[in-house]
Length: 237
Length: 290
Image (cartoon, rainbow over all chains, first blue to last red; front, top):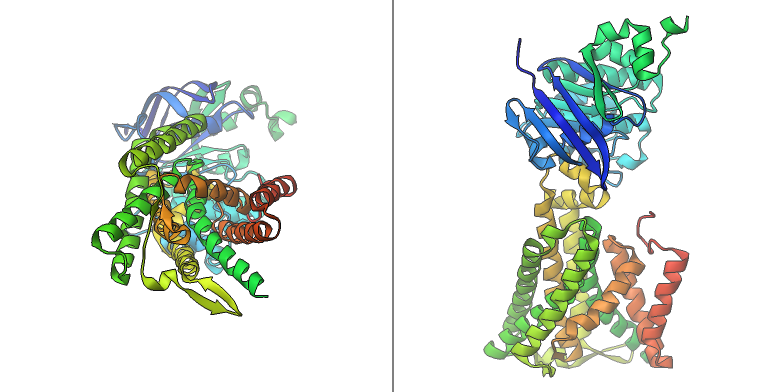
């Protein structure tokens, strides 16, 4: 069995003195998509932000064998961690081209890949990102991460608030991304999980309460309802 | 008519000085959220550095005056960069401590300047052209006003081009919007912090040399006097907005000149304008809404 790309041990995080991640331990395999699931407000986004050093944290985080839990956010990212934040966080006053140029870390950024995945962005390169639709902004946010050759992608609720057609496009882009780098994905949409994820980590009240195979969990409606509070079509019937 | 022209151009000259201080304040607050009360000290040290150059090498020559401007800007930049590296860097997101440290530095440097150059104003000479006037629509305009206006326009254009066409400029514009996201793209935003302090310090140092020509003297309190109005300009223009600072600098200075000439209440009118803007548009003329 190959070594995990990311090992997280006893991760705790605080924001303004408030504990937002209690004690999180899990591994991210070196390939495929690992989905982080959980009810609203249980600490999924906080876990991603803590991994990236955006929140004060303690515990041990290892990326490909190297401790990264004491590194600043920019150093963690430069070690090959791409980040797609919740709510996109594009720079509204910059153009699409400037948003993408700012994100280029590598000497040879993968502009062709981004142009192939998101042709609409090429057409809108001179447009201010703040004037784009939510779906287009999500494409900018994903494109920023995909421009670089990452060892791991952290993706936070990329389909939140998007139209079904855009959700499909985003899922396709994520599948493309997962072909070249493992992805740690926070997502609420079980259809997207079912299409992309190989492994799941379920968080509740800031702690990991389940890890395992994605397909196994998705085939068990009772467990989904217990862990996530979600009624799937099977258990509703 | 000639009085109006005189007041208008003199106001523009004063506005140019306000802008040279306020541009740095605005950039520093916009990117880092730091209210830098030591910014006036960058101006004062730049002014004294320029004065020392003129005193030692001769004040009459344009070449020496140009050198004084360069030295003033360089000294302001170096002092500002050191302030960021040694004091402010440890205090990001700690706003109370930032205020205490920068106010403390401002007080300490004024005392240091008084100890070094004395507390009395030192009158300053310059090229003869700066001491004479040019007739505009019947109004004799002191030539140093034109120099201050020209320098401020060049600084504004220079900063705008820097922000628009360089990678550091791109980082600064993005950082003003969302600093955390800039770091999440793998960019060490601290380098941009130091650079912004240095750019702001250079503008203030340049402003110091020009202010000493405008007022005819240099003193340890020159920066503190201009800093008050620069803060008002920064707030009226919108914290973090360079264009807002330019517009507000002109508005404040011209209004101040007219109110002083006709009613002798220039400072009061400026404070009333500040109160009005804060009531009607708290984010400033061109600032982003909260």
